[in-house]
Length: 246
Length: 207
Image (cartoon, rainbow over all chains, first blue to last red; front, side, top):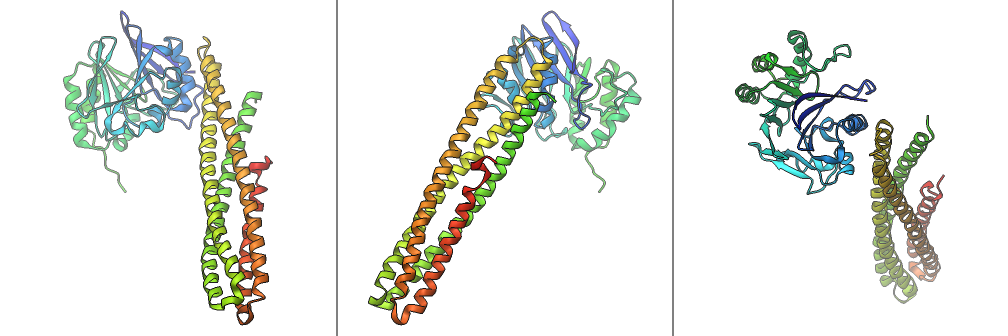
């Protein structure tokens, strides 16, 4: 089963990371799910694939009543992002799924109805959660053509989907990045191949550098916090991505 | 392995096998449709031949026309079978999805202590039963439609055999008419064999 870690709390406003399942089969990539709660309601970020649903659901339900989830935020269309959608909807069919307009007619192949989806325009939108305004920030072509990150300006957390992701060996499973130089080696190959455009990367780095970010939370690997956030942005800015040597 | 898991595995492999059987049935139906199209063309040629033979092949002409009607009816019948096949594919696919979701929900239930999964799992199982029943009903409809097609082919066989008899009265056209009626008979037998093999499909017999 996965474990939950509260990474931010201020009154009834919380960020919970759902991470690291020791029983996860090795052939499935490890994923981090994040739950933002505010005013008794919750928004689940990149809820994961159908096969990891039991682990994510059970971990989440130790902290939060799943029937109080008001929505799911899908950074992009991949199966490890939201192929569990239909299972979440079994618990609350009223739940909304926020996803780029580009994928809003593709994701229903995982489940849901026309009412389920809220298509995010390219420039992004504000997502309201019981009065809390979360910002869907464009991150197109990193690594999907329609891609969004989610920024919480109160918690100063940027959920960055696959940006910042690292494929960690089993021995290195800390929740936070402890040694940036050591950690980033596990991120390099992933970013070179999965990020499609240097131009898009440049724009994202400029945008992220202007934000106040205490924690950069990727969907795979460890969370960057404090000075490591800017360190990551600088590292990413200099990395050449998107070319395959064939 | 738990009993529930073994039951799920058995259900999955049965549904997977059903899907494969449906695919084979569909392939056989496509073959029958192709052959019935051939009968139509042959019947048209036979009608022209009977006209050339004149009064000596009047009966043969009538039977050729009946065979043409038969081929059209058979195609219509096969179209309805195809519709039922599509329905079966839909339901088997849903059953397969149900099995996967139920497995995941059961795992979730085992990992969750507060019992919040139980009502969802119960609802899911009710829906699974409904899908199973719908599939069973479609299976019966398909079986009945297949029996109807079989009866139709029996009639086609009678027509082809009667055409063979009529061909004998075709005077100078007798050899040509006998050849055509022999081909009719052969093709109807081919369809009968196809339908026989469909009747024996494990999709209907369950083994």
